Amino acid sequence: MNYSYWELKEWFTNVDFTIVGSGIVGLNCALELKKKHPKAKILILEKGMLPQGASTKNAGFACFGSLSEIIDDLNSHTEQEVFNLIAKRWKGLQLLRKNLGDATIDFQQNKGFELCESGDFFQECIAEKENINQLLKPIFKSDVFSTCDNTFGFQKVHQQYIVNNFEGQIDTGKMASELLKKVQSLGVKMLNNITVESYIENNSNINIKTNKLDFYTTKLLIATNGFASQLLQENVKPARAQVLITKPIKNLLIKGTFHLDKGYYYFRNIDDRILFGGGRNLDFKTEETTEFGETEIIQNQLEKILKETILPNTNFEIEHRWSGIMGVGNQKKAIVKQVSNNIFCGVRLGGMGVAIGSLVGKELAELIK
Image (cartoon, rainbow, N blue to C red; front, side):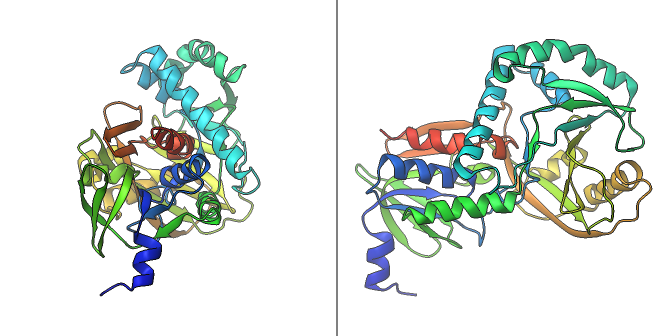
């Protein structure tokens, strides 16, 4: 198809900044660029009908790490690195809330609860609780982790939970919708169902080749997270996360965000339903993919845990299943860097997109002087 003079002139001529990816990072990058360069022509390209990776497919946890996850991270990172990671996640969550407003994204701080499969594992975690509370005190000014009894009646787990007193939850759809509205109200142009296939950097501009047409831009910012390896040579692997949600359950008393098995499983309440995801650890190799979809091994295990542990005495039906693609690596720190003269990236959010996406987007825009 040939595009008209008007289309080419309005959307694809004299483009200052092109952002690839309309998820939380890409949209926040656009917001910050528009603040810094109000007269700039900014174009966001999105290969999906909606943000294609995890921004609208995640579980909506406003979290920064369960106790066992932090203990696990301390085995592969220094104390300072872990402190910096959590400080950044917390700062990112505050930025998200400030930018969009708690009511708009349905932010609720109902606390986070970690369920331990055995008393021994619970004790292992509790042995480190005070040290980690002290480590995090400069960020939160009080103890992050405490304990409570099994008030929700879960079975096949230790009868005490580890409580994260600062964890919250959001409505992911509302977050993405509000971000889109905010960005477009500033005059940022956005195109969906267009895939960037390659690009060639020249001295003063970049020739972007898409599945629809080719055009030039002055700067290119890549915010494709789990799909980063398709456009960049960076240490980012895709990680698929599978999720399901029940139909509404009468008199559902479960309230909060919940972590099981070092955070590999996670669930929460939303609209009188249980949203439940995880199980990537059952089959890491298969889940290292950019293909969306669900597998029997993981879906069966999710249903089993739902029936035996989370809702043992409750009839429920599964209404919907889906998956999202995260970007992970051997380090938890996101990659925010200048790739070449006019190309920049903000990728590898490590499953913490809600927490750090706003900040990574802002930092990505700030790389441009």
